[in-house]
Length: 147
Image (cartoon, rainbow, N blue to C red; front, side):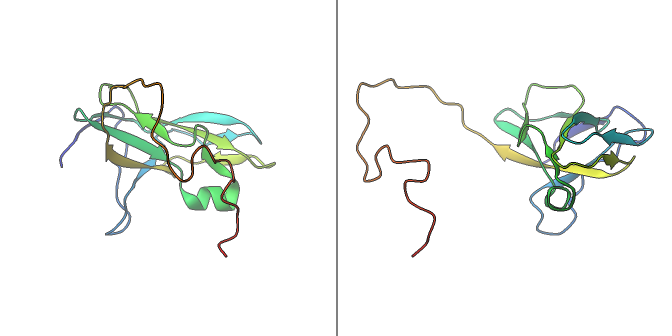
């Protein structure tokens, strides 16, 4: 699949897969100087890129596991969504969950982007839902042990 992408800044780096079987393409900070994220603070890191996704697709902006594990830095909204009709700059909202400042350097890989198909649905409002063995059990109702 080919997707149109536009550099909004000459320093912008196109998203890239780091390995042959990577699902996500790394997104790079397109900044002129380091940006410090205060402890428990958040910033929007620009990528310098805009995309034109086909109808029925979204770009999911996900964290990089190493940044979360080593530094406690992750997307503030869990997984961000770039909709097919959005043409503005792709930004990454980073949250520093640690008690130490974190510095985003120019050119740093700050998140990953996964392109995913989605379905548009219509609701069929009913008075009664079909029964299942689980029923309304949730929020830990199946326990935490596998045995």
